[in-house]
Amino acid sequence: MRIIKRTFFVFLIIGILVWAAWQWLSARYVVPVMMYHHVRDVETIRADTISPERFQMHMDFLNSRDYHVIGLDELVAGISAGKRFPFKTVAVTFDDGYQDNHEQAFAILEQYQLPAAFFVSPAKFGRTEEFEFMDWPQILELSRAGMTIACHGMQQLYLPDADEVNQDYEIRECKRVLEERLGKSVDFYAYPVGGFNAAIKAKVKTAGYRAAFTTNRGTDRFNTDVYELNRIRFSDRDNTWFILWAKLNGFYNLFRSLKSSH
Image (tube, rainbow, N blue to C red):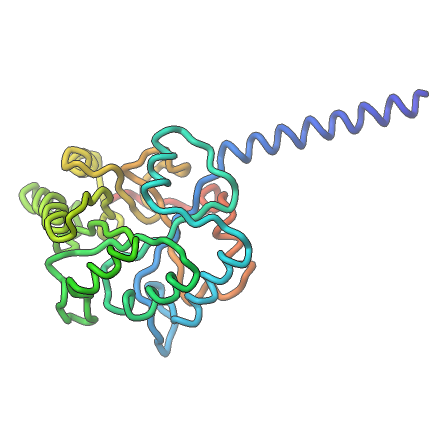
């Protein structure tokens, strides 16, 4: 009888510890927001570039492992409401608006019927600098297909180094131009190079955006502040399923270092 009682109490304690650990982890789960830039083939690995083949592998990982890919509307609404998202929830974003996003990533996203957000800069549409940017017809095609079009500033100025006049222009004019051409509300902003400060956050909020995204900057590891939502960069370096699992398990922010916001 004593052995039975001891065994019972041992399992009871183990059960309580497992439950407590689960509660602790659940409270710290952060929906991973994937961040991409270029989707194209390159000879050497770049931090801002992923090949179409590797991007396909990433999207196949999400699809085959039953990840729930949500749009930014659902993500931000849930965070604002204090919702606990289920494990294996993820969002996908692209910065800068390069033409290869339309030419390469778009078809793969449609293949798996996955939503994504594209942070773009109207002053760069159709321009060729070092790389070519999407034009208006391509942006409209993405929008009509259900993709989220969001702001990355008019010209992608690094806001902490800009004066107030240019900060206001970058933040407000981008939203105005996109909304006028798309015929719908544009609710999300991504700080170029992830840079922001308290005053810039206030300007973004006052301009009518529902949320703003950074990189791994700031102090909010748990993405509770919708005006400094951290994202996770992906590139050709993320070339195994284990790496993808590690970056997408929802606890990556607990262990990675955060940079200064500006």
